Image (cartoon, rainbow over all chains, first blue to last red; front, top):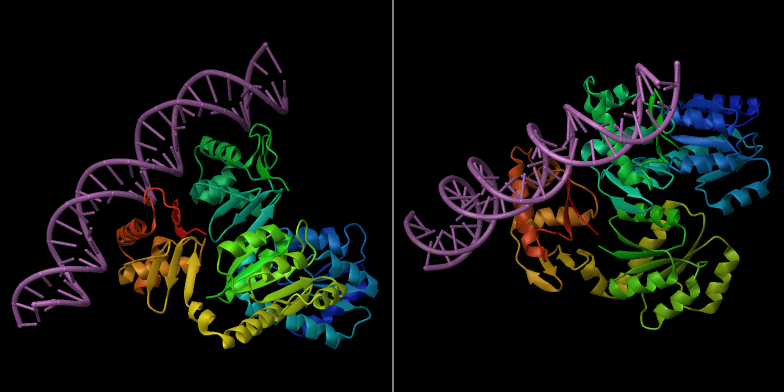
Length: 228
Length: 228
DNA sequence: TTTTTTTCTTAATAAACTTGTAAGAATTAT
DNA sequence: ATAATTCTTACAAGTTTATTAAGAAAAAAA
């Protein structure tokens, strides 16, 4: 069962697509603008995105670029104007296919199917990319537990890596010290200093100036977050 | 095992291609401009080049002409604009194929495969190299289980060879001790020391200074990798 | 088959690195 | 100003990895 995120500001379109796809046993998530799409994408496990280029707030290309910062999920573009398509393809943001509106349901299905087939046959490929997170100049490769800072590999200890991974997998989300301890050590926290010190050590490795962190920020009285 | 040099100034593209090709057991070298490409080509044994036409410094056509001065290595051009392709083909600089961006991974693979097939049918020189892996100064010939260090043959025991082969076939990927044991012995590990000692022996044979390994590195708390 | 040689595993110790703690300094909120 | 929170540092304790050496197992040679 694949999860497909459909992003279009016209409700009739998302609804129609939902019906086509649901019939084929796909599970559909709907978003009506780019920001909403990003929220859903962060929360749900999405296997393919169908996205309109022209949208209010965050348009299709910008949304895609944001998503591409840390995912290689297949993306199919929708648009009424074929000139828009040229622009998108020129941007080289990793469009896997495109469909011009109005489209016929069979064509839509065919493309969704073929894109998914293509990607799943390369499942290792996707998996590899999906095990990578990049935010700003910091890049995590989870298969190798490797951390790159501005392209340079740095050494981290296992605990440091786990904390960094936790925070980077949920950018901008604030984790309390207790939460970090529980998630990383898998047991209830009893000394908050431990986490504090690890945070300091991570900062020393990934921040230019650990005293004025750019990524690993403290939210006073609440906890820490990795800022996107 | 073929070595493919991918030249493109857009890191996302070289990275994506690397993943596609590595999955097919090609070994990928990446360059981000023509000059870098020439350097790598001079140092490494390259069987095929994928090169972008538009690039800073030395562009794709000029780089190709330099290479063609003393090599007939197959070259496939990448470009966003098909007009550029016309120009390249008109130049008659020995383009073996071309792919317009954005390309689909399957198409890329198909062309790489067919180009290599075409070339290998001419000479058995390359075919001989198919079972060879070369990383830095270390060379494995898998047909006769031979290991060369800076061109000099060294002796390895069967287990040493298997470990080295495993790590070198997946350069930069980190394998835990358990993983190494399972893959090499084909049974679950119960004494990690065994692997540790073998690693030490391999280092003794392939490293200049086993205490400061250049190739066979440890990743603390996680495992070992062969660094490229 | 028996002997010899090579390779593999174990175990014990040493070295290197990581982690948690504690205590004082600095910062932020009340 | 005071209290609470976070930062910083250093060090001791704990882990992991490296190194040896010696005996067991396997392979090769006699």
